[in-house]
Amino acid sequence: MKKGIGWAVALGCWMAASCAMAVTQDWKQLGPGFAGTFADKDGSTIALGSAEGPRPGEKALVVKAHIVGWAGAWATFNGDLSKEGALRFQAKSPEPELVEVGLMDARNIQYTAVFRITSGGWRVFTIPLSLFEKAAFQMPEAPKDKPIDWTRIVSLQWLPQTHGDLDLQVGPVSFVVGKQRPQTGGREEKDRVTVQDFLFLDKTAYGPFVDGKTGTSIDLSLEKDAEGGRLALFHCDLKRGGWCGFWMRAGDAWGGQDWTGAKSMTLEVFSSEPVRFQMGFNDGNQNAFVAETRETRGKGWERLAVPFGEFHLNPYYQPPEAKKGSVQDLVHVETLNIAPLTEGKHEFKVRRITVEK
Image 1: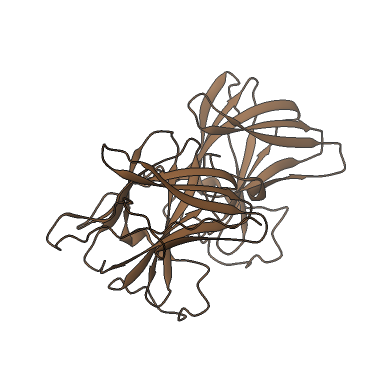
Image 2 (image 1 turned 45 degrees about the horizontal axis):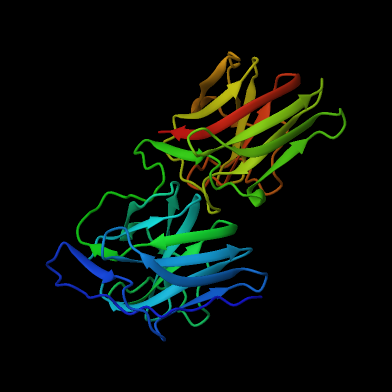
């Protein structure tokens, strides 16, 4: 495995606490001892460098990586973030990327938050510190069951989440005081959760199910849409008495989504002939719920909305780990299903699935 090249990063200046924004890292000085990289032993590589920043006279950190399993980069600094409100920076990438930014305290406790880059140009990201959560994997020496100490932050990290090649550039990093509106690159809507828009749905996060007796078949391919996003293209051949469909992850990463207060599930679908679907999900107790959509008109893109009151326990299948008889739990939903119900050969596209609250 090729080891990532560590480039040291000198610290930017901390400004007075009364200032609205403090530049903590400007990437203008590079030297040994203050930054580095880490990667798995499965072939992931990562290296750091510098380039011109988003504005004249600024510098940007360049992170180039090939991700097989995991890899990351870190830069040290010493700061008290207990009175700060959010992390702010500009970033860009030629391809859509999903990246975690991490903060580590003096006891090696790590908190992370996710941001999405969906365009090639520079974009401002604002990540409130309230969005940072304890990382699933902690350093062995980090104390268990302790929260991060915001008064003693010692490391800033960049952790690519998208498998394959990454070319990320990050401009000067600042912390801003006060309550800030999130700008994470996601669809941050008050009353809507984007369950899946397929932009970061990798091959480990979806799969088919089919009866295996009737000759029924189904496949899915992910393609770019006209607006630079991605959509799912399905081909199916549903025989009489057969069944098929695809399960997929809810959200950009594993860990589940909070659907509390959901009123409906909406499917944006394209079909050239009428098709009806069954939508499904497993709740936090692993009980399987299903509901049917209306039939599409078969004349292009349309939105199919399923009221949440129509979802009911799947009478034909429940996972072995399901807690039967428990109250529906929408706090932690990890997967959903889409299954065509109209017999015959069909091609249809799906570009976005949401839960409306």
